[in-house]
Image (cartoon, rainbow, N blue to C red; front, side, top):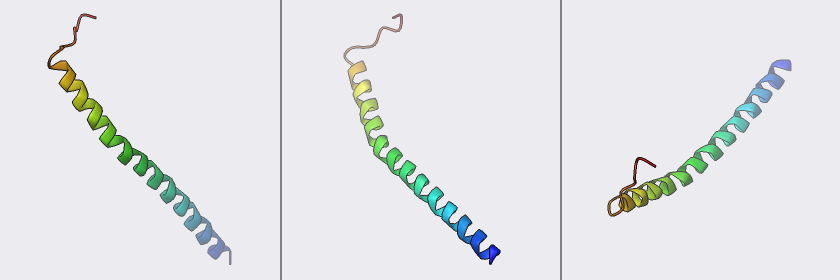
Length: 55
């Protein structure tokens, strides 16, 4: 009986961990296109107006 409870506890812990990791992955998947867009815009702005590295 105790073994069954321990297995259920471990299973619930793994389910929580899986949900947490899934949410983290979804956040990163949403952030990736935004970061790529910002990088492209930054590079396009550097072409006509190069940044002054001294400042």
